[in-house]
Image (cartoon, rainbow over all chains, first blue to last red; front, top):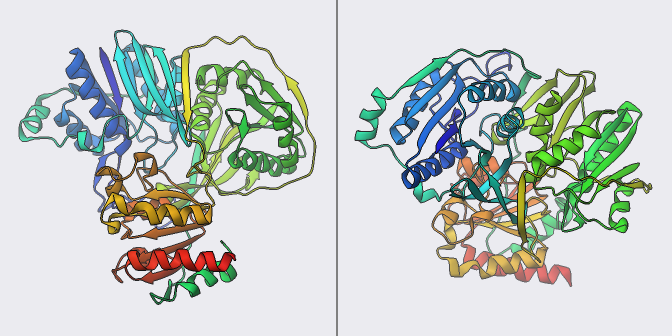
Length: 248
Length: 315
C-alpha cells in the first residue's frame, strides 16, 4: 500500500507569535519549527499501517528550503521518501493544487493530511486535495482500519462520532484518536542517520494561482488584570459572575 | 443572487451553531440586499426546518436522501444549487469543515475559515479571522467574485427575526462514495462547541475519582465539562474533552479553569472565551494572567464552597 502524508512545518506550540513591522507577515525569527501536530498523528498512523501491510510511506510538503529539517525529521521517524514542492505557500488552494497535481501523476492508496495546521488554521487543504483528485474524503478522522481495499473509519461529529466505510483510494484529515499520544515516535539515532540518505526530492510547482490573500495581522486585545477573590469568599465570586460579568 | 447557508442537523435536530450560521447569513444578505437560502441534508421534520425562518432564512432546500457524512455527495449538491449564490456560509462544525473545502475547490472560489466578523466588504469579500490558534487576528481578502465563509465557534451569536421560510423538498439519488454505518451521539451531554459555560479541570485534581465535584458544578451551571491535555493523555478523562491548541478550540461565555496552570497551548484553545475564571493553588500560575477572575486556593475547598454559593444564589 502506498501512503502519502502531507506535512506542514509550523511554529512549535509554545511559540510566541509576532509579525513583521508592517503586520503583513508572520515573523519567523527565533521560532522553532516542528511537524504540525495533526500531521504527526497521521504520520504515526502511516508508520503503523506500513508495518502491518508492508507498504511505503511518502511525505510531501509545499515550502522553501527552510522546511527541510522538518521533512528530515519525518524521514527519521520512518517515512521512506520525501517530496518538497519548492514554493512559499500563499493559501490553501495553492497548497492543495500543488500537492494534488503531483499526486495525480504519482498515485497513492491513502492520502493523510492533518485536520488543520496550527499556524493558519485554514483546515482546507485535505478536502481540496480530495476534490481535485475526485476521491472520498473523511475529515476529523479519529479511527482508521484498513482491510484489503476497504477502510473502516470514525469521524468526529461534534458531541459524537460517525462510523463510515469507503474503498481506497481515499483522503483523510487526521487528528488525535487516529493514534494515541503515547504512540507518537521520537526519532532515534539510527533513524536520524538513515534519514540523511533517504531521498528528499525537490519539484517545482506547476502553478502560482491562489484564491485568497492575507492582508494583515493583529494580536487580540490584551486582557485587563485578573480580579482576585479571597479563598473562602466564593460568594463574592458568584456575585461578580452574576452582576458584573453577567454570565451565570 | 443569494446567500446560501448550510443548516446542519444532528439526528433531525438543529443546534445553536446552525441558527448562528443562519443569523450570520442573514446579516450578510442584508449587505447584499438579497435572500438567504438554507440547505439541509437528511431527514428533518417540517416543524424543525421552519425554525430556520426565525433566524432569517427565506427558503430551505431539504434533501433528505443525502447523508451529511459523504462530502462528495454534499459538495456536489451544493454546487448544483449554488449557481446563484454569491456567498456561502458554514458554521464551525466538523461536517462543515469537510464540505466547505471540497466545495471551494469544485467551484474554484476562495474560502476563509475561523471567521469572526460579518464581511468588512462584499466586493471583494473581506473578513477578519482567527489564526495561529487564536494568538492572532488576520484580515483576509477572497479574490474570487464568489466566496465561502466558515465561522469561528460562538463568535457571532443569534439574531431572531421572527420571519418565516418556505420549504422545498428535493429528491436526488446521489452517487455515494462512502457508506455511513451509523452514528453515536452522546445524549444528555452538552457538546463543547455549543456550550455557553465550560467547567474544565487539570492535573490539580490529582486523580480521576475527584471529578465528581467538577461534574456537579457543571450540572448546576448547565455547563459542559472539559480538561487539559495532560489529563486526557494519562487517561483520566476522554480525549473528546481535551481543550487546547491540539484539542478542541472553544469560545464559551464563561470558562472556569480548575487546577489548570495555563500552559500557552491550553490558553490558545480557550482565549476566545468571553469571561475566564481561574482556581489554582499557585498564585504564579500563568492562567491568572489570562483570567478575568481568580481564586488562589485549593480546589478541594473552593469548588464545594462555590457549588454551595451558586445553589444559594439560585434559591
